[in-house]
Length: 442
Ligand code: GLU
Image 1 (spheres, helix red, strand yellow):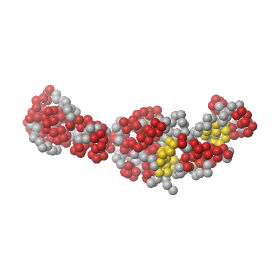
Image 2 (cartoon, helix red, strand yellow):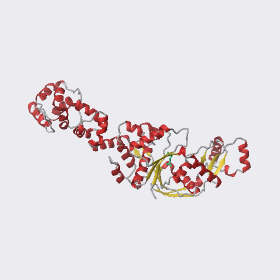
Image 3 (cartoon, protein in one colour):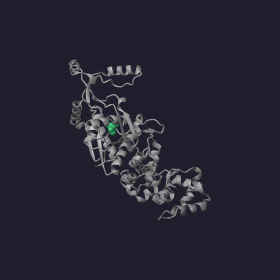
Image 4 (cartoon, rainbow, N blue to C red):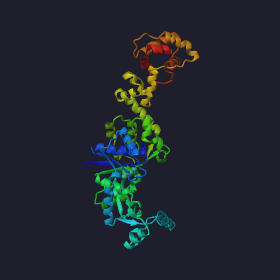
């Protein structure tokens, strides 16, 4: 049996770190088991789903390195859902209801006022053929509810452990709306069966759905897959992420210059018993990944942590990892340049600034009280060729001649050469800047 999982976004928006995490967990699970990772667009809501969002999600997943083995769109699979609905109708599991939204709302309020649980009273189930004919003659259009078995549904959830849900505590769910459109519940099960899903890994907001879906799997003659309902992410303030999607979208993270592997490492390890370590390659992450290490407590997402992780990843990247990107930014200063600057960067794109500082025009800062010192230092610059000992040779000479030492010696030189108080070691920068530019800046 091939382990088969899916990531099933609704293309009604772009994915954010929370959805990306679900995709990452599914992808890693499939890869670890040499299984299949399916991307399924849950686009039965034809009004809100768009091709642009689906394309955007594909771009996001490709950037993250989560390439799917197969891609499906529910909007192309209505015939399968219709066949399943027909079977459920003829088996008496899908029944027509005619209440308007207002009537249902009124019933709910009345139940609540009587301290009864607001569970659908199954009026539709008890309609005779004549009642239905009459309602339809009056222009009534049915919506369709699934008749729950009203029993204890349980499964051994790979994250949550043993889960029990008594479906008598639930209303029979509407599977088909009055206009004939499908809600997510049935198409998802039909596809999970048709695509041979062995595991459904998704957010814990779907735990109750799972109980309903187990009944639907069985009503369609199929064995339910294994379930893993992971906790949802909260922000550093402990609140849910859903309201702040903009900056947390995968697209925004890419535009901000974060490394895909930082997002993937973070998404895979957040909310687990594993330390969030920077992984620059999927194979090491695969070794660290284990679904059973996911905690039931909400994972805490903090952009600052992600940025720190990003910096740690950048510090591990080799010149060949980034050469093309440096070239695209016009900042390919060769291997020595990358070695000199990379441990000072938070993002690869910051290399462009240092490339400008090494090769371009720099207006160094020289304070009035340092002018004399700087011109003395200029006079002591050694001749080229330079290597990583030249800085020491030079500053030793400057120290002797001027009596300056420590910060008073180094900081004015750094400011004059780079225009910045911090940065990579000058011993490695100096040979890259070269004597002509150094002299000009001094
Ligand atoms: N389209 C559903 C969602 O985005 C999929 C849920 C599931 O994985 O079953 O919530």
